[in-house]
Image (cartoon, rainbow, N blue to C red; front, side, top):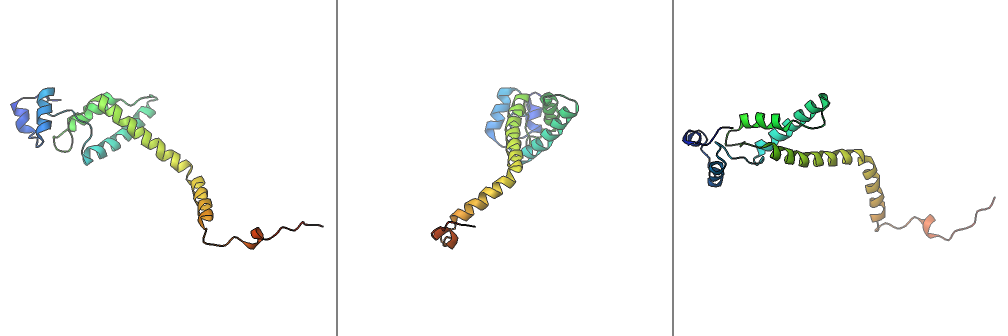
Length: 143
């Protein structure tokens, strides 16, 4: 992360005045922001999978957000990506993890959900008459 100075202001000409104000307050060449652009979110989702796989291969329980932030900040350009902190990446990763868990759960129960939808469609068919074997008087069966 480069410090803020006049050279950084020229190198990273920010269009948003609030971002310019923020970087001056933070004393950095670029402001520290969460992934706000489409490109930044795409980069995050690609990289979090890579860092999660790396942690799994290393038998670590947590992603190395320090390394993730270092790599991210080296690629920051002031247009598509700004600086990011380890705390921001960790918080953003929690959202990613919840979303991934929801998708995995949906995949696990998708077949059961199809049965539920089929059953619901059967009962929604109110415009169709009930089958006659359900509407007639029952007759005891004997051998």
